[in-house]
Length: 280
Image 1 (cartoon, rainbow, N blue to C red):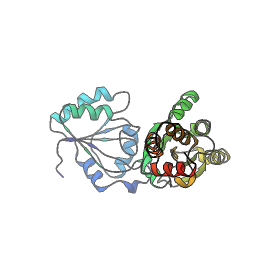
Image 2: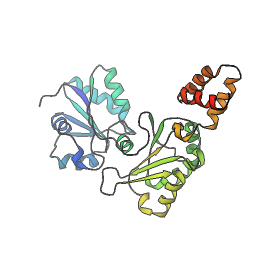
Image 3: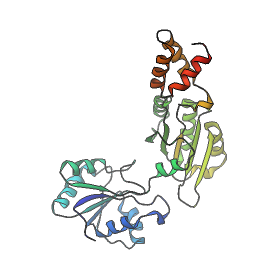
Image 4: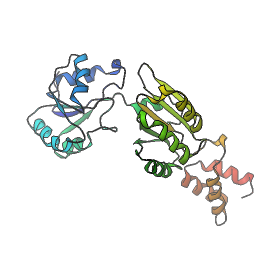
């Protein structure tokens, strides 16, 4: 297989080894160098598939220094692949500085599709997936978590976070404090692995389940929170109604509904209907 001289972004399985693509295996077999987040960790995966390509470490602490060296490899006509410990590189993993440097140097960056814990979990969550935001890991300290979640409290998109097992209880408690105990969430754990579980319900309900079952405090975790925007059959948030009322003091209902909908990410027709029914 002849490969173009480029940096290949190659996703690896997040649990089930059968999820790697045949194209990914071909690329990893045929590049001249594989940049790994952890060569020992990736060595197990590569050995499983009989891939003997040379490896080099590229992680948070050496990425900027290694970028120039990898660009030199590209200038010598050598194709290079980038992988992380699991999933798609750069998604809460190293690679951003390398990709940026390679592009600035004028070389191609070719991405392969593949596993990503955030997207895989979202697809099975039952939460709205037409609009979402990936926020990576929440801050480790409580104040930082609360501040970050408070910023996101009125975001209408589904919120997606990664979390480590030793912090999961603390993060759920912070979500409860910042977003309210009735916010609907889904906690996906060990996605694609043997002990995969999805816990669904209000923050309070999921927190109680996690505290009661130590097994839920193990493994890789994706936390997903329903966005602030409610479905029409769930009612209109008070803050939106207040905005609509204020706008109606100066504007016709139709215009006020359009502006309130734009501000809060809601459908103007629902607000107009509410205004008509309530004499605004």
